[in-house]
Amino acid sequence: MQHSPFTALAAVYDAIMADVEYDHWADFVLTYARDGGLNAAPDTQLSALDLACGTGGFTRELQAAGLSVTGLDGSSEMLRVARQRLPSIPFEVGDLRSFELGKQFDLITCVFDSLNNLLDPADLGAAFRQAQGHLRAGGLLACDLNTRIGVRELWEDNTIEGLAHTEDGREVHYHWSHHHDVEADVGVVQAFCRVLNSDGTTEEFIETHRERGYDPADLETLLGAAGFDRWEVVEYPDFAPPTPETPRVWVFAWAGA
Image (tube, rainbow, N blue to C red; front, side, top):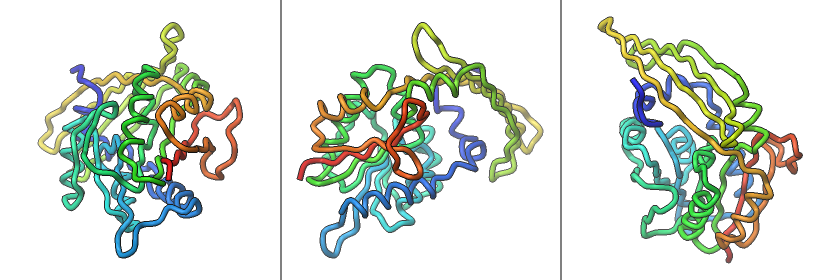
């Protein structure tokens, strides 16, 4: 019944996350990129690498916007779903801290607080270095992260439950309980799902997910050490400067020209 994060969940992830505004996030990122002067070379498409792409929800939006996209994720189960829904996009299995693709991109993205799953700041720094190394000169990294207060508030004795339906007709009952581990200073999610299959059989599983919050000062230190030329940390959706009460921030970091 207990599974590793993002394994059993892959088969029902899109049903549970059907309301995620990937399209709005993509517009937010691409607006910033265009306003910042990110342009493709003549007669080429902008190239993008979507890190921690999961089942490809955000990857699809980048492709729909006309970018040439590659997806990368550490979960082969999530990528199996992504390849089925987006067969024209190349997907790679890789660790955010150590992936090597042998090419560079105009834009690298990592959304839906995926980087918060890196619980050691050194690991987050390694992920930033890998991203920086895969950007062409003048390229842009765009990512979002929950802050420390965001993790504390989101995970403080909170419960989310509901009913969703997969495209193939399965019924998914989910009950996700959240709490903040004060001693470890991480958020913990116990994600329980009961899946009723079309043949009447039932499957149940639990995945435990953990996230560490990172504040703007933490991120700026790591971005500088990773070799980025300049960056901004802002709020969604208005690009405003974050406050001490901001639960989630977006990072836009440029590689040197």
